[in-house]
Length: 545
Image (cartoon, rainbow, N blue to C red; front, side, top):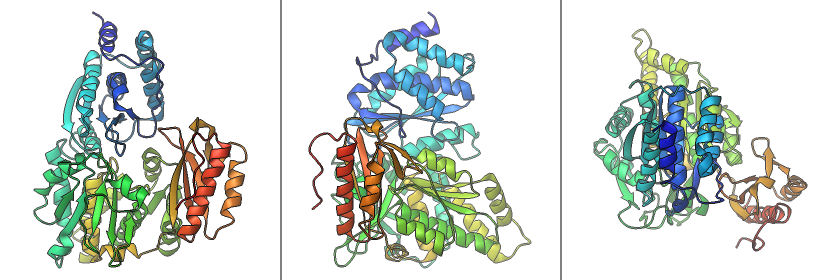
């Protein structure tokens, strides 16, 4: 039997539903789990081809992140732990949508176009989240890999960032770390403990953190991590998966969008809390004050805290390295103002989607990127890492400079540079707060967020919306941007933009203004404009209460 005959036979066991069309978006494929079996098999095929092409290990993660439990999805991870390249996103869409009798033809076209040496031994690393559908779907991926005679390693239940980490470790021959969950825990905990040694006056109360695990994989992995932290961080887990549904009224996305604490979180006033999302690549912090008001510290606040800390350490170390913060249109205007005008940090804006931020952050010595939803990390250039490590070992420099360089070195080791990682980011935030001796309230008042509101409008076809200027302005449909501009002029410190969802037929609306009342009115009026000009379906958006 030829290789392609085996693919054809095995693919018949993973049939494609008639007429189904899916698009590989910013987060890969994501939809109702019961129609994804054929996609998983075919992503196993594609990952195998990608491995042969790059002569490196490729990752396949089965997850739908912050989506409801009945959904699932899949995304491919490239050799350096980053998202797969755009050209291969196109191949993923082609393969997923190919009818059964055309599948091998599409495979052969990809092989020819990419000049893939089919004798090259491929390696595919697979991981999955805790959804009930994830195990059987990951088996379909393994089926796809084996049908092209690929070698696979199934890591089973891991967070998305852990799989990104494994891929990077494997392809740097251990230079980045050991490609096991234990290696991951040991590297991060060692760096965290090294950093917190510099905060000797920490009380047990300051070490205590409440964590909402979104009833997902992050909760399981946080329990495993606990043993490595040696009481340097005392985590109290809520929504740990023992009861309750994944992402249901909990998790980072729920907290960010609803701007309230997750269900099941028992928090005292002033208590520091954070939430992961379903696959533990996002994190947001929050607390309630003595009056019972909820305070959210999202990706913008996280980026500001981390970039300020890094800039201060670089100054103390005497290192001339540029720190830049990469934001999206969703970044709160107050954060941009503070970074540019108070901290004198370079800020650039790019399209929504971690792959865009990651790419932009690579242009700087140190690139800090966080989407407002809490997904982000810090990237250090080779030049930056070399200068930091050299200074940390230099016996001829001053104690102060060497000490600052050692702090920077441990910070580099604590960060998962492959992708945004809720556990790694949490440990970094906790270390920074401890070293600087500040509370969550001190952090919160560095700047005050402008009131903002996010809404979504169902439309017949999200592709009618086209944007420019890092998604801050709508090009189509005609008249929509003019309407938004006219509405924004009615309010103080206002801005608004719309963009199509990457995964569903909805248009996302974002608005900011000087008061919550103003921003709610602006967001509603922009939603109406979208509904009327972009083919809204269902009832007209109602005013916010």
